[in-house]
Amino acid sequence: MRNEIHPPYGPVVFRDRAANYAFLTRSTMSSDRTIEWADGVTYPVVDVEISDVSHPFYTGTARVLDTAGRVERFERRYGKQGGA
Picture (spheres, one colour):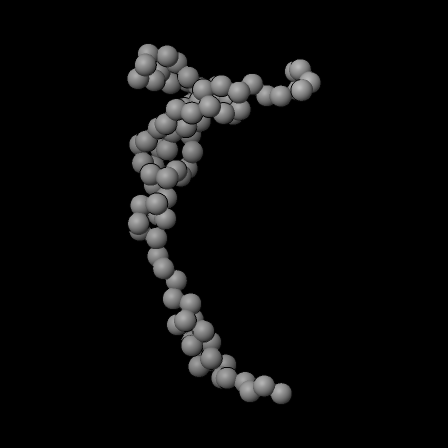
């Protein structure tokens, strides 16, 4: 590997503001803002809009689309067309 072409890889805190949840991981992302973590060390913090804590798929609040109902509605509206 060539030196000095890769971004620095280190600990970063990602904070989900919607769910008031934060987690510490390693990343190449950086930030000017910092936060003091539970271990007393200050880390850069990156705010995200959604995480697994607030995403509807993971929380179980996702809506299931009724694709069969959509097809039936389409066929009622435009009629079934027979094959040629």
